[in-house]
Length: 219
Image 1: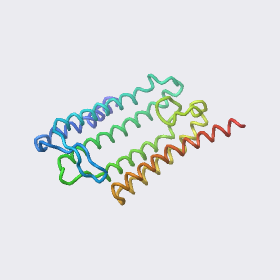
Image 2: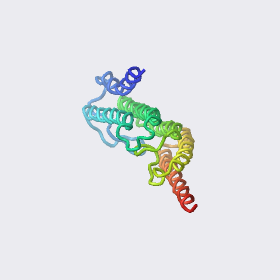
Image 3: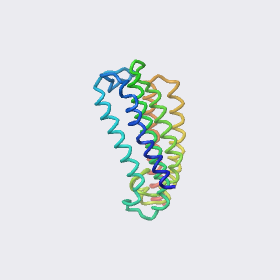
Image 4: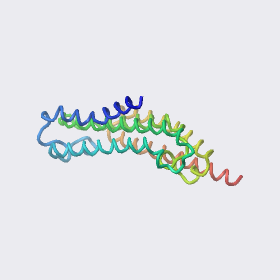
C-alpha cells in the first residue's frame, strides 16, 4: 500500500516535467514569463527560463510533500503523532496535486501564448485547494507545523479543537464560494475576492480562538 501511494505521488509530481518534455519542441523561442492583472504578458524569456521555473516548482512540490509526510518525526508534540500522520499525508497530497495542476497550467498557457493567461482558472484552483484543506482541518490535533498554531491553541486542547472545527467549516465554504465566483467575475475582481476570502478564513478563526481563550481565562 505504501509503495502504491509513493508511486502515485511521484507520478503526480513528475507530470509537469513529462508534459514539458513532450511539448518542448512545440514551444516558441521566446515564451511569456509574467502576466499583469489583466492576463496580458508583460515579460518574456527563453524556454530554458521556463524549464528552470518548472524545475523549481517540482523541487518545492517534492520538498513540501516530504516535509508534511515526515513532520511527525520532528514535531515536539509527540502525543498526537499517530493521529496526525494520516491528516498530514492528506494535506501533503492536496498541496502536491495543486502544485502539479498549477505547473501544467503554466506550461499549457505558454504553449498557447496567444490566448493569454486565464486567471479565473488559477483562482478557481486555489478555491478548490482551500475547500479540500478545510474538509480535513477539523481532524488536525495540536502540533507546531500545521493549523492555527497560536499560543492559546497550543496551550489548550479544547481551544484547538473548537478553533479548527470552526476553521474547517469556514475554509470549506469559503473555498467553494471562491471557486464558483471565479467563473462569473472578471479576473481582476476574482483576485480581489481571493484576497477578501483569504483574510476572512484567517482572521475569523484567529479572533474566535482568542475570544475563546479570554473567556476561559476569566472563568
